[in-house]
Amino acid sequence: MLENKIITNKTCGKLYIAGEYSILTAGQSAIIKNVNIFMESRISFSDTDEYTVFSDMFDYKLTLEKDTFNNENILQNFDKNYLLICEAISVMSEYLKLKNLEIKPFEMKITGKMERDGKKFGIGSSGSVVILTIKSILSLYNLEISKEMLFKLSSYVLLKRGDNGSMGDIACISYENLIFYRSFDRKRIRELIEKETLEDVLETDWNYEISELYFNEKEPNRKDKNSLSCEFLAGWTKEPAISKDLINIVKSSICESENFLKDVEEIVKKLREAIKNRDKLAIKECIDENGKLLENLDENIYSKKLKELVNATKNLDICAKSSGAGGGDCGIAFSFDERDTKIVVEKWKKLGIELLYSEKL
Image 1 (spheres, rainbow, N blue to C red):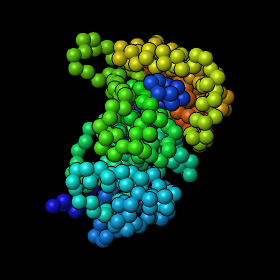
Image 2: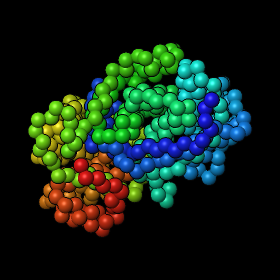
Image 3: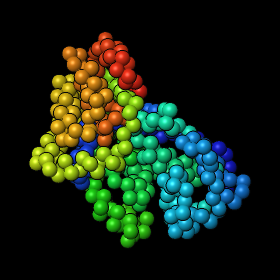
Image 4: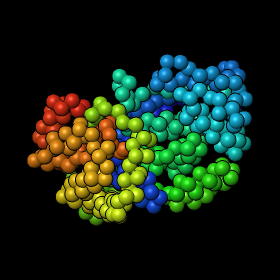
């Protein structure tokens, strides 16, 4: 008998360090950093025959009948604001059936908008809410799964909904760490989802790679213990960007560029080694080069505020670039000097750019 108690869960956000846009092409790589700004949930089995779902993104809750998730066609008529959460619940209902578990309605409350005054931060709220919903349901049924399976289930939900992203945000948030991610052929997996069962799709080799990276932690069997004094900074421009629209605009620019994919892939792999070896000069070089490639790729990526964010680091022991789709949202920086960190944060403040997140690495 499953105990009916309130269970809490949380999921983080993410920001791209290198490889955004190129990662949309299957087989390309990126490095993505977890941002420990959290979305949280409270979940418990319902005392009634109805599901109750509430997110503080909206000013109302959703109530659904017990048998709602037994009929996939009903999904088409769901409230559009809660569609992503409901798709995740639907997929998890199917997953629970695979585990021969009795499906019971529940009450779930999600808080943590990852935005302020109606302006989103751009740190992966869509991916975070999907993963949070899945983690919440798993915990309700006392189920434990691997980070890899969490990634696959969450990606399955988004692919089913026709998401055009790389799933890099899902990879990072699932692993809650700085990661190297090599993307898979999403068209192939989407076609499998249409034809095969959930079980078969999850058991298929998707042909991707997710590796956790570390700056100063002592990895097993590591011989040199060189440390790197570094602080990760996320600057928020307070200008929301619509990622889906930007992706569609920039895709044509990538097609027209002969060397963009090849050049970015070389940078990402070089940065992976630089992080592993704590090579400050190589890290700075990779961040600068990737930023310039993005700026030259399409004029829509670097907004005026993002250019100011990067320019504020000149003559400081800091490297910076846009992050993710660009066009607003956040830029990232790595500072190798505490004094310079204070200087750039003050510069950003005068430019109307907020230090959204910082972490010593």
